Structure formats: C-alpha cells, structure tokens
Image (cartoon, rainbow, N blue to C red):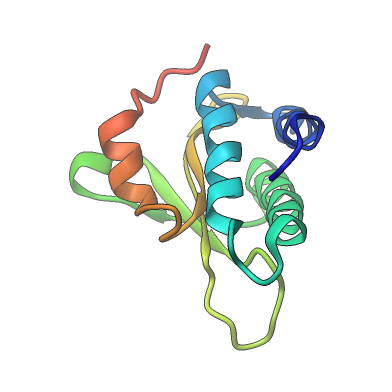
Length: 134
C-alpha cells in the first residue's frame, strides 16, 4: 500500500509545474488513479513513482511548447491529448496520456494518467470532469 507521504510528494511534484493549471481535487484523484494503475504490477510503487516523474517531465515539455498533443473530438472537443511513455523503452507504445488545452499562461489540464488502467482515461475525464480549475 502506498503511504500518505508518498501520495503527498506526488501531488506536490505535479502541482508545482509552472504554467500548468488543474483543479486540485482532480489532480489528487489522478494521483490516486496512478496508484491504482500500478497496484499488482511487477514494478508497483516504483512504477507509479516513475509515472509521476514522466508526467512532470511531459507537463513541463507541454508548457514550454516543446511537444504538442493531438486535438480530441466529440465530447472532448477543444482539448488535446498528449501521449507519452511512463518509462522510456524503445519500441514500447505510449501508455500515458495528458488531456489538456492551451491557455494564455500555459496549459489547463483536465486529466493525466495511464491510458487504460484503472479505467479508460478519456471516458473518465468526459464523464467526471468539468474542465474548470480552482
């Protein structure tokens, strides 16, 4: 089981990315979803920590304009999806997503996490997120 201290460190690392805005409750929920995604996996807690580090790196790249995601359609119109790997492995498919849109001072993030675990990130975001930051 992941400690509260570890969860707090993950929330702090993600929330301190300059130029990134996200509802604080959604950010905390996505950290918990990262824990759930790695429960029972071979790399468990270490994998979750690596996913947090990769997400921080991806967020910084998005804010800086160094990378760009693909526009989404339908219920998610107006948002983009950036695909990345939680662990850089040549030939491995990107298993992580950041759903975001550009703002005047950086990016607004709707959701981040594993594409499929613990559930489909796009369905979760479309049905559970308003897209308003606090």
